[in-house]
Length: 350
Image (tube, one colour):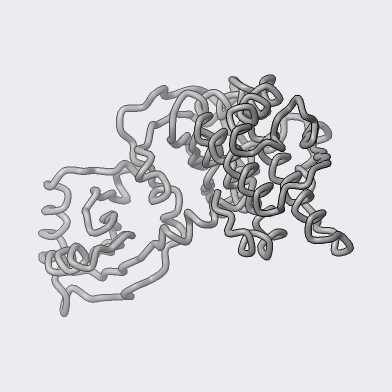
């Protein structure tokens, strides 16, 4: 059973046979801050979770297999035109998106608790007090009907039953009915816990988010080159190389932004001009410090500490003013790994 919080859909009942899924995803990643695309057919069902920058996770289930992550996304794209999925798009609150996208990665906290020794209502109160983020899987006797109860930081978000086709029921009636049936017929409980701090950290790493397959595999873009530190450079030369790679990351992020992709050079030089009183070497007209298309040339005598301070300050402000902090820090992961020693030595905080 694939779970997605199905509120009022943004669009529903589209036929995947007629859709270009890459364009659909691109559109709704721009249209919605966060959400999920649900695919259903008599033979299979699937979901893709996304925010405005990434596909966070995917799940695919048919009669033969159940997969998640990149494998699931690939399978959705491979089968969409043949399976005639009914496709619906749902908006999901940004602060709950990681929760729904990572339920499948939950770990067992309490296994096979029996209603003979544990009361479901008491268990719910215990999970509220323990601030559980995860869910309780209830297996009812005698027909093993399944019921799920979802928690986020101790708050009960709702539930879902095996007969409800994965739809989340937020009513207190669902909870009360599940407690009642469990007392009458008995059942077992498994409590699952999801560590969202781990999932968020993973999502910030550029190599862990899932990706939609390119429409033309031969046209897939090459990944951005990893920064490589040259051990033969002097301390001052390493600083220049580090700042060159930092500005290259900034340029890549800005040029990927539809509103500002053609304005990077202007934005950077304008910011440098704002800082000339404090950092004279940034004056574009003095030409001591020249950055263009991934290459930095510096012909001045400012101490490395001042050089780092000025460039980092400009970078931080541009990222903040353009509202691209999330994407910038995701792309910065490799830079942080390569220049960890310099980041510590110069106390760099971006």
